[in-house]
Image (tube, rainbow, N blue to C red):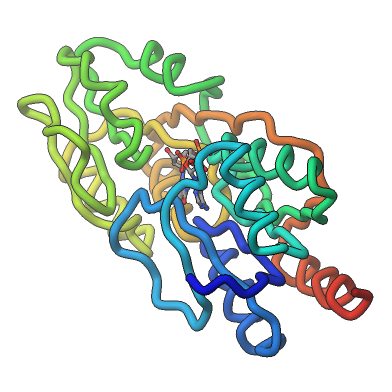
Length: 252
Ligand code: NAP
């Protein structure tokens, strides 16, 4: 990265972040905007924005980064479960008085026919699984190993890239993004005779089809609730945020 100042640091990790990236590239080409990814997956989206990949090195590392590049605005558009990054960004931004806004899509709420059981975290979700069950673990790759001790269940684990270590014997690895249609999800659930689903309340449309499929098949879902996030100006959709960015940029 060159040493020129960065106007906007966009913390990515969601499809909404990608939408904001496109907006920044098209609407403010004169600004230097940089999107930052954690680098959990290698397959990063192709975006018309400068990007950097990997952690900053905690709050101190991020503070150094903000100071070095004289960042004028931070947009936290990380995944709702990427709480550490959000807390770090809030602390680093506050220490240097850099404005920070967050884009956080609404959580899913249960509809008629849904059989959801809330879980406070992954450990609770893991405990709720009965011995001998056939579970669909739709929790991504990073934390899948926290279920590996449950050798008394069958699990179908779906993730975009291979897990850090092999799944327990007898489990099935589905290397793919969430299916786009309910029919595909029904086929997957039926194919593996899934009796229960574990997922995080990520919100958004991209991974919602599995929940519609679960409703239709009357399969219970252990829904892991979102972690606490810092209190900062928050927008539920890119549209609201885009208006604010425009105002902030024009005012400065
Ligand atoms: P996290 O626990 O908040 O972040 C852990 C560390 O990763 C951060 O402290 C930071 O490292 C680095 N990091 C996270 N987001 C970053 C970004 N946008 N740019 C640069 N560095 C970043 O979050 P996580 O471990 O990434 O993810 C936690 C859970 O969130 C996952 O298991 C998954 O369920 C969900 N999730 C996350 C993403 C994502 O892109 N992060 C996408 C989809 C789902 P330093 O402290 O070194 O700065």
